[in-house]
Length: 88
Image 1 (cartoon, rainbow, N blue to C red):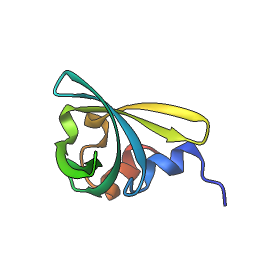
Image 2 (cartoon, helix red, strand yellow):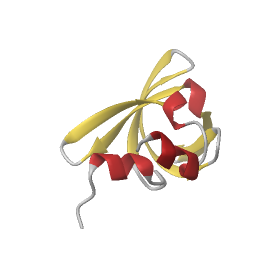
Image 3 (cartoon, rainbow, N blue to C red):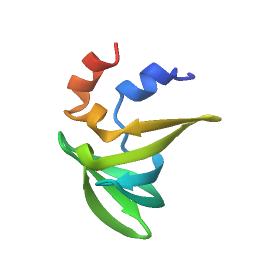
């Protein structure tokens, strides 16, 4: 079954490949995979090491098929249940 962008953003992001663009206002430009997600942080595996990033300070690209979506981590504050309400 093919997911829509809305369904994709409302669900958990664990296992999704992303490109980190900025962290705390500084350019990063690294590819990584989201390993874990809490209410305020993402744990992202970058260059073979897992590091925690605060959602409030991160900007990243999320690939959805051929489309790339630029996301500010502030919009993802809260757990998955709270995010479902935001992206109705």
